[in-house]
Image 1 (cartoon, rainbow, N blue to C red):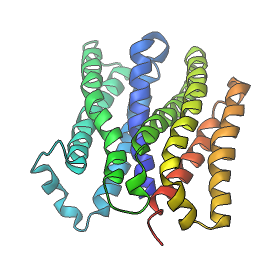
Image 2: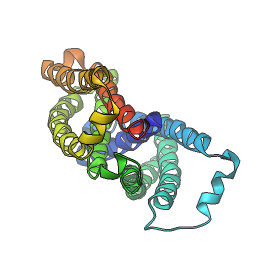
Image 3: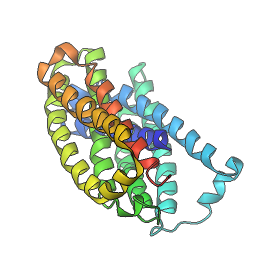
Image 4: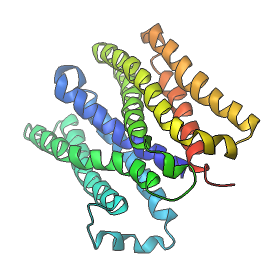
Length: 263
């Protein structure tokens, strides 16, 4: 579902953005990291519930872990999400305990768990784009740049959530860094989306009528690109708003993609 893809990107993007920012500038992003890890864990939990619920027999989901086929996108994605959920859960738990006054050695647990979670996080963020593009569904089979688009979009969404957390926790220096990063990621989002859309353009025009295309481009271009860009240029006054419009644009793209093969 479109919500599944969005939650996946939000969870993994929030973790990767938070982890990379913390490793690059721990003094500025250290106070934000526990909340970023906890938020990523909640989003991932919601995504996993949707994934299991979409199965024909949800109670047999564990059978997907009986085999490991690294060349199969579904198998790789299942194992990546499973390992990511374990390491992310450990990192979130240790960071929250440390925030509540736990012993210093918890910092080592947080650092080790974050490092260990990076590799399965990358697998979790990449597999969906490949999974869509290797099918024979009209439109999906031509979405060769979907993985690139969703990967950049996930980091973009993750940084926007970090910006909101920085505003709530009063981390002005971190917020300034994130605004600059978001402007660059937003431009990359336009590039990757253009490459992705070029592959599905023909099927997209056949699938959606004129009104549908107008609403789609309004959500993507006006609400998903122009408004967030202008808000980010305004600075700290509206730090909580870019994430709202970026989510609208991202959800619009994912809804258009999920329903693309359905006549």
